[in-house]
Length: 88
Image (cartoon, rainbow, N blue to C red; front, top):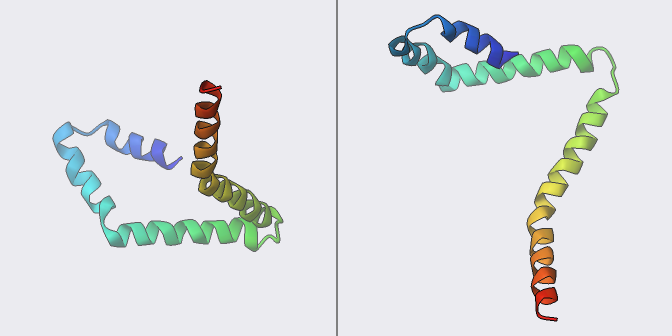
């Protein structure tokens, strides 16, 4: 949604006008406000409605995080196994 809105904002602009339009969006204050707005929207959508979805978000996020942390270790094991199978 945000990417679509951004595309619609810059679609009619000239190429030379785009940096002037994008530069304020890259400021630290703008990013802080965007994150706060997103957190407020999340709170209104899930927390205030007593939805169980935040629990699922934490569980799925934890599973994805643990998979990404363990991935280099698993890849090393796979490379070692493939290397040892080539020599047998």
